[in-house]
Length: 269
Length: 234
Image (cartoon, rainbow over all chains, first blue to last red):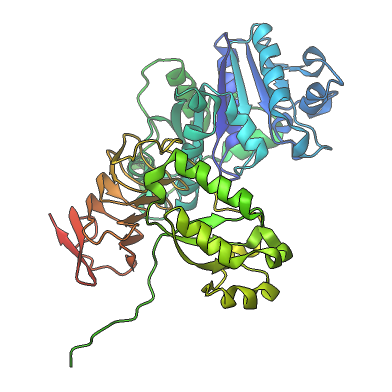
């Protein structure tokens, strides 16, 4: 049985695709056969962040409409044999997504022996987002430490509890909160919501805090998931997050303002 | 000098009967079917008739018959809404009140959308109590028309609780909360932390934008004292 995980947020630009790429890569590196699907039909980004945009032949919509089979459309990642990407279509619009089509693709992937299927949701609460979450077992709710993002995540949590297959069956999706772009310095200065405040509002178990880091942008631009950048704090935090998702107990890091050492305090830096 | 009467504009929750047809026999049969389902619900309920969907066929309505039929099923007709303009004179002649069209009704065929229906679908027995053990999220609306609502968690900004009776929230109350929506002035609101956007009891409402700061975040009870909403710490 594959475990289907939706990465969602409501608000755009909070780091869903960055998270999906890092998450899927992390799971694959730990030995799990993983597929990551871009549900953002019309605005495909995932293939860019995964660095496989030049290898897209068929896409998600081609598979749904029967123009290609799942094996033809899946792109094998260059860095891991366990990782496959199903890109979104750039030319179609989101009406091409149907519930039956999505269900069939997920079923095909499950039969192919995938351990995890990551659904990278588009922003908003429309069709694409609704279908990305519909069949999910788990949801990663990506939130930035600012009020509108937190409000939108709250809305998404409501939809997860009412609009999904699990909800229709009277079960509930496992919810995990992932805070991204967290800057302890700006929290200390009052520009950003603190982690505790976000948890207080959303009341969902925290699975990770990814610090604000320049390496995320750098990784996106070079098409390498940031989790592969072992030097960066964001890469390490994503690795912690994947391990927590797999059941390990890993303490949270990068929550405090970094103290400058004596040397740096004396000479600046 | 003591006033004998007061005239007030007020928000009350009324049932709206949306007509899809002008066929009086069909309407009558449909009302009968509804009564079979839930006889208590209709009894002595004030009701507004919405004619939005009829468009110009509203002209064909037999307004005298309509009033008669509606009353026959135990409903108390309040007035007509969104009626085709040229039919208005006919309605007034049959002694109907015409209500100002609500703004949201200008788009045809869009009944208010409830995101989540946490109340059971079939109203066989009147629900006296609705207990929720999960947070009420932004965008969710919980409606218990004839009973109390108890929330064991918090409610979020942008959520809405509507109860015919009282509302209890064992956590932070952040959204809107309307108690006594059928007009029960005895209904009360209790919460562990008051951070609500709007509170209302039996149609008297108050925005909590510039509420006394000493009550914000407090454990409070809200009740109606004469015509005023009172908030007291508990």
